[in-house]
Length: 298
Image (cartoon, rainbow, N blue to C red; front, side, top):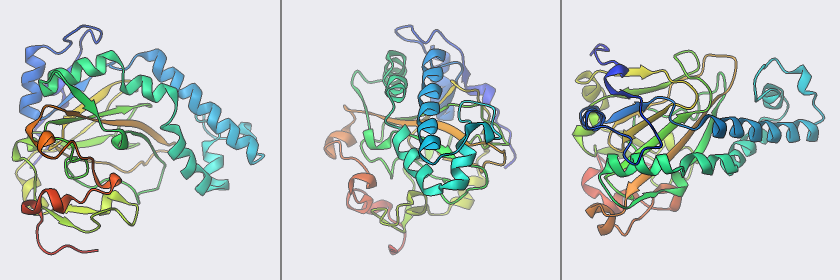
């Protein structure tokens, strides 16, 4: 289908420090589309703090490798990252694992406004966060190995089927550097059957672990759209919503933060004892054999 949906239908501006920041109109839009774009959601000073902390880490690696930041072609907080990518790509991979531990990341994902929104979206008094589903992505220009194909969150994070992902850009994102692509309303399909390629992610690329059965036919029945956003905006979407990454065609790294939240009171969560996902050694097939399509591979 063509892109008949527009992000304006689920874009929200609000007082994010209010006890119940989302209006009934916004909640209805979330119920219909399975997603909301929250404008200026993150506190600007915390986004700035993340950039300062990340710049410090990049500077430490530049010094370690005896590289001069001044030689970088970048003119922003991650100046010098291009030099590191050329000099020692494996070291940048370890930087990727480290930046998620920064104090500013925890400030962003546990801010009172986050919990207020999650309580409303999941209609629960006890939301939780999935630690192994939290991180900062660094998607570099021209690198596509770890881009996420069309998928739902739920098979990877089995804690609850009443769950919400927070996707927050730390730089402006658009079609050039790869904003997120969504298929609104697909959350209404529920959990979709999957072909299991690598149940416990032994190959360390979760994007290749599962494949949705009959994906092309599903997408043919639903409009999809790219959702540009500014740094500090946030996309929140249901765990069943189909979405995917897009390649970064710009000349600078795309920085985004992801966190996954769930409803402790959800019957599925209780029945499964709040189990995690494949990153914790949990096999999807054990909990949902009815959703396994065809013989498993790998």
